[in-house]
Image (cartoon, rainbow, N blue to C red; front, side, top):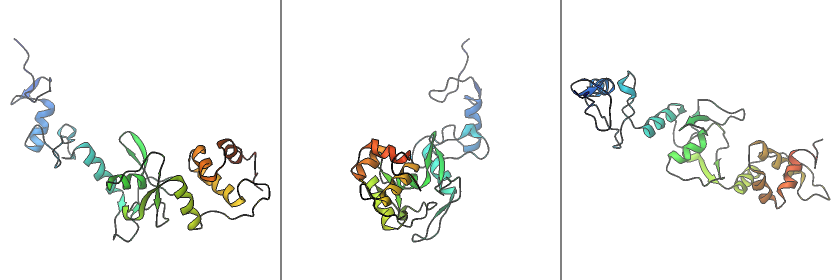
Length: 208
């Protein structure tokens, strides 16, 4: 005699009761159906019917978790990230098996695309802010120009034989510390990646 399996399509587990396996029986008991759906129509992440499970799909479960870490205020105010942060104050969240910057993810969740190697920039200049109204996607050059405009760079005197100014040297080092690709930095300032590497390693234009 063949072993009876769960009646849910695609499930090959042995049935427990009312034609359902143990897992789908628990889900059915909690949700009234063995195959609950998220409001978007995708299968819900029910965690086997355990207490506290969400009747949301994986994407919407993650979205809800994201906003649980945000102190939401008015549209014009900063929405501060209250979860994990970098030393510089930028929010961090583990999202789809990857560690993400919260402000960058906020832009993506608002439906805007950030091209590869572009940056999530703040109009408010508050690292912990994830208010999508305060964020925009910018190129590495835009990011540098924004730093200069807001006075977030250090000042210095120009060197008479230098390819870039002392001010720009400091910006180069700041960008490298943020993890910006050396090739991107080089393109911004019209120099070679090798020259940037020497500045970052302090072989050229050493710090005083």
